[in-house]
Amino acid sequence: MKNLKIIVLAKQVPDTRNVGKDAMKADGTVNRGALPAIFNPEDLNALEQALRIKEKYENVTITILTMGPGRAAEIIREAMYRGADGGYLLTDRKFAGSDTLATSYALSLAIKKIDYDIIIAGRQAIDGDTAQVGPQIAEKLSIPQITYAEEIFSVEKGEVTVKRRLERGIEVVKAKLPAMITVHSSAPECRPRHAKQYLKFKHARTTSEMQDASEDYMQLQKDRPYLFIKEISADDINVDVNWVGLSGSPTKVKKIENVVFTAKESKKLGSSVEEIDELMKELISNHTIG
Amino acid sequence: MNNVFVYCEFDEGKVADVSLELLTKGRTLANTLHCKLEAIVIGTSLDGIEKQVFPFGVDVLHIADDKNLYPYLTLPHFAIVKNIFEKEKPEIALFGATSIGRDLAPRIASALKSGLTADCTELIIGEHTENKTQTTYKNLLYQIRPAFGGNIIATIVNPETRPQIATVREGVMKQEKVSASYKGEIKKIDVSKLLTDADFIVKIIERHIEKSKINIKSAGIIVAGGYGVGSKESFKLLFDLAEILGGEVGASRAAVDSGFCEHERQIGQTGITVRPKLYIACGISGQIQHRAGMAESAMIIAVNNDPLAPINEIADYVINGDINEVIPQMIRSYKKNSK
Image (cartoon, rainbow over all chains, first blue to last red; front, side, top):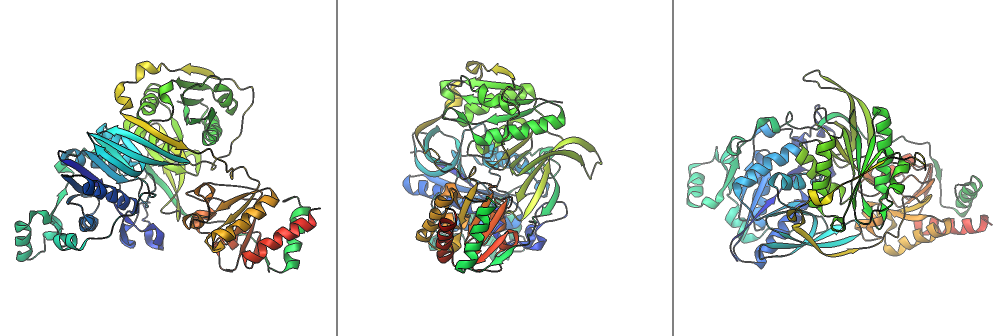
């Protein structure tokens, strides 16, 4: 088989399972600094699917692409430790506040620059749960999308066969490459770090991260070019600034409220036979049951 | 004013419940905006489909009927909806937050460079002033949705782009007919002109869809269990109680994730929203995501042994006890007293 180039889209997300009070800024965007940052869970499922393809076939390369602030390079390294070959960080202040449309616009331009046969991404990110960026990138690249993937069965003769997990069942589809695949959380979990990969990539750094590095570090990167994580800026991919960032996003956050449920005056009961008997009688007499 | 559009999902000869719920909401929005409600149905063997759709107050029904349009495939459905939207320029477009709607709506939004908000729990018409420009927009769609793992509720607007697109989960909106005799106009779409071979580049080679046997949404009584139920065996008690009361069994996400019961029974933000007349929450702590899916129940009974469980705050009755004792006792008391 000739070379097969896979791009895995991954996002560093605030861990919304551990939300504190300072999580939101006044303009309604997320204060990422106040939360622990993690590898978006379904993007790990996506990475695992890519790694399985790499195991099964020859000449497969996996490139991670992530968009975010400088510290998002952490998840590119994490993906490398688990078996990815390299990565790009799409980063620019101009992207701040982008909604899904602006994000998919920027990512699609970066993807065109990198080159690919298959793009694999998590179905959705836990900070927004929108599941929009995958299909929107597919539209911008004019390629088919296969959403809700649970298993990529094969990539042969320029075609990919994928099992999809739907609400009440499964579907197996076949598509010509190139294609965009988004992976569902029901897909297998990602393998852990591999010791050899960790040792190989632990000094991988972006240009920004190298700014304060010692001479030794500079030399190391020169000797081992795979340790260089390339940063892509808005200018590198000729982004039209009218289509990115807060102002380039069609959706605007008008208002943010904390969720408040109206508390009721509840009646407290024990579990004695009499108390439950009394309750059931009451429910029957007021026609709630029976 | 341009019109409100609803993309209707179609399966087994029927328009999906979620689509009928969207038509109901779409009618209300169209009334507020003094515009028409239009529906799109794409599938095969659609003769007579208007009888299911018009009673919800649909003024115009677009039908694309072709054997290649069922089951759903992204690209052909995308091509048809995009074509309609480019011609008709909807003010608002609504899709179900289903595996179809969440696949199709973003691709449409991208093609039309329009804003899209996923998983809305409420849609209302209102005014908006942009802080920066001080421009005021009248009659915008407020797209209200939980965000950030359900910890906050965000109101999103699309001031400049049209259509304003939103997806809504099944069961979140109510379903209500306007009148059995409501009549609209039918517009048949000439599919052959719109589709090319390239739209069929993805092929379905296998499909196993189970018919939904469980109908939690329309159940008047729901006995729901959480992680605190403890095991699949104890969960059987909930089925016993539900059966005798003529209700259905629901579950929290934690119970589903632990394998106590099937995913179809999941209630809450990532499951179904329910509003039964009686909700018996057994061993459910009541995280915000779960409460969002059941807080509107007419009466809530919480059974658990945690006095601090958040579910207790919204319950009418809190029974402090072990569900393995309380539920069998409820069954015995019901049998004894109902005759």
